[in-house]
Length: 295
Image (cartoon, rainbow, N blue to C red; front, side, top):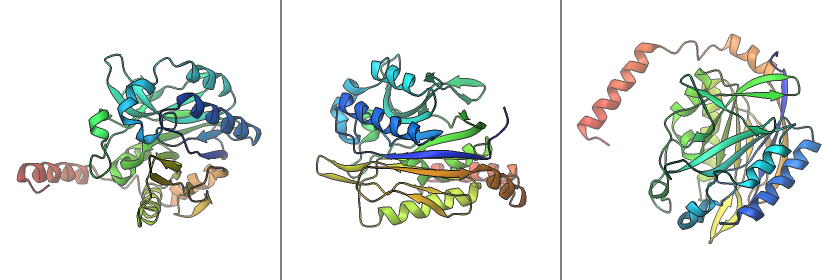
């Protein structure tokens, strides 16, 4: 199947309630049905959309394994890809802050190091201030790549979760593996500079990797914590081409021109210019930092 020239993405900026998995899934169904009616190829939900970010002590109770809600959503996702942030529990009882992509009536498997994997697991777990993620979750190990179907063909995509895009390597790995789009999902609480800083980071990730970044954040409040929303799509030149309002639930459509992106990459070969010697020097510098105790 040939690569599509354009895809349509729906940004589902929702306000999930803590621990209310049933209620949150009803909202997810409703937004997904609306996205299908708007001919979207993909709908993207925020980080921990099924559980709420501050569920913490009940994460084991809301973890997704064989939840019938997932099966129902997969059936609904026959004509659309659904990027869904959730708590994942493995067979050993370990929890992950994760994302799955549902489509074609089931869970879409991604490619990673020659294996097929069912989810993306957050790499960087913030544990400072109000954040306690390493208390509840184990970190992921890498960045898989998805081959997703659109109405016009297959395209490659990656996923990163919140703190991951504050580190440049996660998106760079996705781009190096061929991702044309990276879905950056978040549950970002409002602080004075957070919207400005996040936008700046997303612009940098899009430009340095010559790809689209689709950012979807939670909205609303949980336990007196406000989530600022502000979901947006940044193109490969750093332009914001679609955006959602602050704090409010919203469903926003964005059309991504993958043909234009391909042509841009031909004349701006930044990924091709990456050098193995520089990567090795980075690894050496990282080792020096750890051994020298500078961080």
